[in-house]
Image 1 (cartoon, one colour):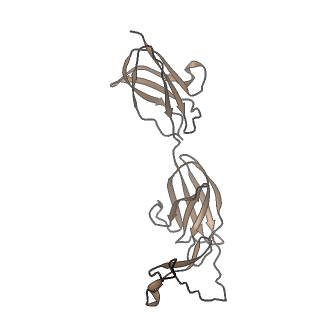
Image 2: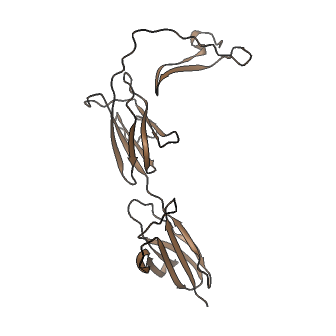
Image 3: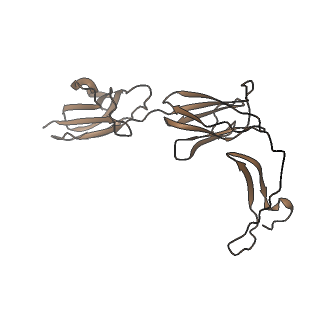
Length: 239
């Protein structure tokens, strides 16, 4: 029979080569070919070539990974055809990382409960998590651990400050694969204004008719200062 070949193109999600890996071809529990490694052809370029293969069905198995920061590749069922040398793209994905946020008062002497944070990489907030709420993997008060975050650059945004405090400034961070990024965010006490006023909202439709049942809050930045206050809180759901 005319032999077949197989060329593996190991790449990341952007199509860039991922180098240094090795693969074997198996049938059942038996390794039939390989391992063949990236550098075996003299160039460590993400291309692994199997030659002189007997046509048939095999399991492609990664025997040497690209390194500890990459997700392992699962077994792949393939069919080798006589006289054919197909390219097989195999995409590697980086492992996720984590961020541990320590929330502290202004001088760093006390951890503060009740804050919430999100991550923004330019497309809006992601991974919004509050202290000791779903998504926080650290049970300690004042420490928020967010796991399974894709590696990238983010702005860490405090969406809710502890009671009696202003939100901290945004912090530029980098999440690295298979690592925990540690960040300490300190808050200064909130000083309420001495002068206060009242606000009355009239909720109406386009024809001017009252719309009942709405609620509103007043925010400064990401912090809710007052409310939510609802239509029926004054005893009458009248818009």
